[in-house]
Length: 271
Image (cartoon, rainbow, N blue to C red; front, side, top):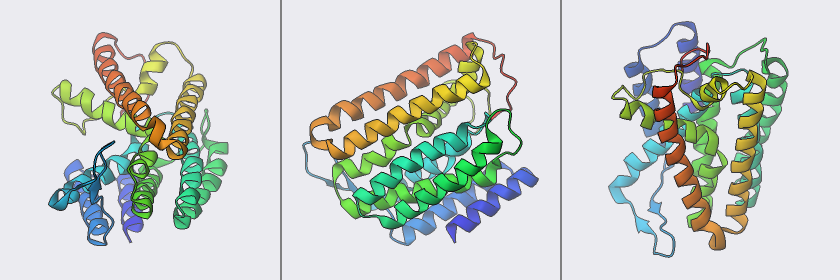
């Protein structure tokens, strides 16, 4: 039900742009539907400490989590082949994670994402002949959001909550950096711009293909870190999590600083 609503919302936005407040309101409604169905983060796992019951705060925490994952793919869908390729890499990782935590529904959905996106990439890699659009990007974001909630529910361990977070590190990093950049710039957080990570790489002189491949490599790095975290979580939990957080802060600040100092040469559409 939620997937269908999100797909139709994206398709509607592709055909006739929707005002942000309506689009965001529908996304919140779908998130609340999931929470009402029992899919929420009830515990906050703190390293070397007892799990903390979130109580009523589980509702806003889960909703923020859902909205971040939901829109993460859409925010990197500004360069041919980028969103599709990163989705394949993340889906392969979540497939392994789903098998490990015996969340077989997640593994099945991720396998379907890999298969469909590999076929899609044949025509979407630069120069693209077809495009994902908001319908495809939001639909993928929804599947990633739901899957990222199922794995922790299946496991109830501290590591399980953060493994999918790291697996989708690149799109989530873009989401966080966009929010920080726009907030520091005193802009509305949903205001589109062309200061994304891929825009900065293009401005530094990389070709579109090299930019896409470079970001693929970053996505693979995040995937490897998430698998290491899953299998060696107790020993490496803090170093990996701290590294990801520091990287997120550094990229966010660089995106803001360089975005202000360097006039963008990228002709890509605002996202």
